Length: 299
Image 1 (cartoon, rainbow, N blue to C red):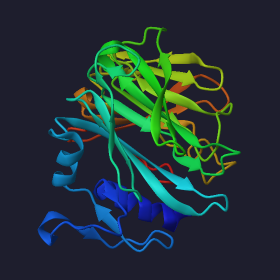
Image 2 (tube, one colour):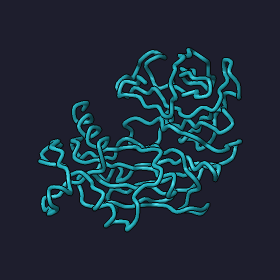
Image 3 (cartoon, rainbow, N blue to C red):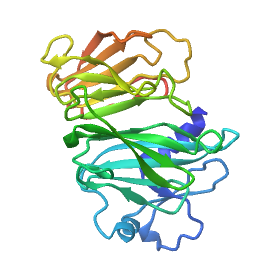
Image 4 (cartoon, rainbow, N blue to C red):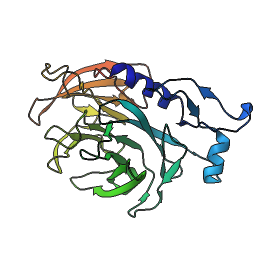
């Protein structure tokens, strides 16, 4: 599983890509990445000329966030993957399936059903199981900052379209700057699936997806313990490979890039509860913009 996931992560991190047996562009117009995924022999790299043909305009103005997912067959073999790229400047999501020959866009400027107003981050569920009796889709969440909401989307693998499922608002949600979906390899929301949301007022919120409600709020503006100053990113330290780990290895620790204080903050949510406590702060002489963790929950 780790080797398979590493291959798809390598590919999706490099570029938007496609598998195409009949590619006819001259050599100067494309780059071939020879990364085998299962029995598929080659993966092609997306090029600027292909993007212009698809959109007749500049593909990105200010891309701020990307998230990747992978698709498994009924025997749990990895055979494809998805990349979702959030373009803050165009107020849209660019997405593509890596082993197919298409690229698509979703969203325009506004506050309507299929619109965004200067979105900041997105995150998506990591797995789609292609056995349609289980699920033919997975979920994407967008921090739609200037609309003061989280937009819920669903990508349908069988129809290759993004569907709007509504929004998350209320409970003081203001200018959400970042979010992180705490969801492992499940195929549906369980009692342990939720969103960490970095609020624009230097607070952290936890939204329970199973109960469809906000559960807790933590933090305030400042430089002390329990405070943040212009934070930029939040990420869960979930380790999906550990079922009964201790509190430092399971899915209840998370990190915040406290940019204004030049520090990385390690926080822990009590297991099975809603209390959050400050575990450690690491001072870094870095301008931290975003955070991610590996498959074992290490930042």
